[in-house]
Length: 335
Image 1 (cartoon, rainbow, N blue to C red):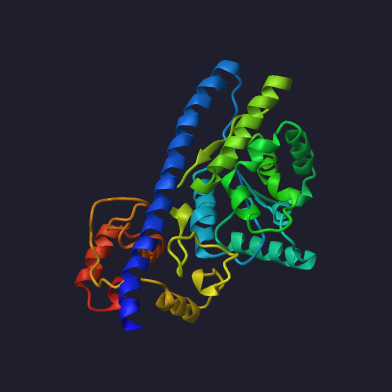
Image 2: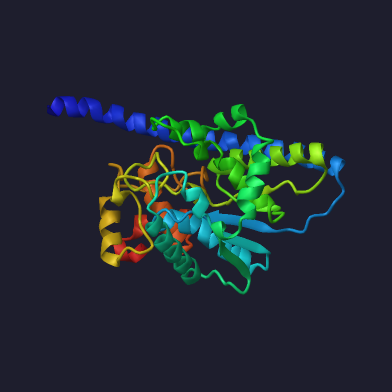
């Protein structure tokens, strides 16, 4: 048995590393493709219409569970920052989107209130940011129907997120297919010009841009083409504590895979101690690469996951953080 473990462990480590590298490179390719398409669309939009659309940022959060640190750094913190910079921000609780999977109505109501409380506690100011429930505005569903008449099944069914989720279901709800169309309606109904998104949502935003062009071609200019606001620090891809090849998720079956905003200090400490790391004690401060991680994130993606959490929480540069860890004799010295 020991011989078998010694043989398999290096193979498994290489497999996990290969999966991690493939995910990172795929994210980079998606981002590059989007940026190129965005440049082409911008040139087309300037030619088609000379209308000026004032900058407006629109985004939403689903009330499908307690927020974790990934949600906070990738969405909530960014919204607060945009708000404090004086931007016109509209933030909604996406309770209609939550219905794409089976939900308890009473639980949705309670989670909507909990999410609202978390947003307010995190710094969202109703005096400067429009905060509301998606279902309270019927125009979302009405515009969604109009845009659905312009969308095609082939385009929506080709999206990776739809194919990934549909593969796990025996009966695929139609709402899952139309999810990107409702997302487009959420933004366009307020003439949103910018949307804070992660790399995994770029293709959905491309669907929105395509629907804008189709609508303009058939009926005339009515909506701006929404642009992506991508994070520069990699906060849109916060990794699971139990499997660093996956994104941290509220739906993960392992509760130790995520740190919830409602977790106690003791619970957070336990989850960090249980987090998957690697077998090499040194922390290498190598060349800047992938997700603003200043050490070898490809070969050491497990410890990179933990260090990136410290970077986000303490606003420390990972290069200096790695040096501090190497010269410190205790955990408290660098945390």
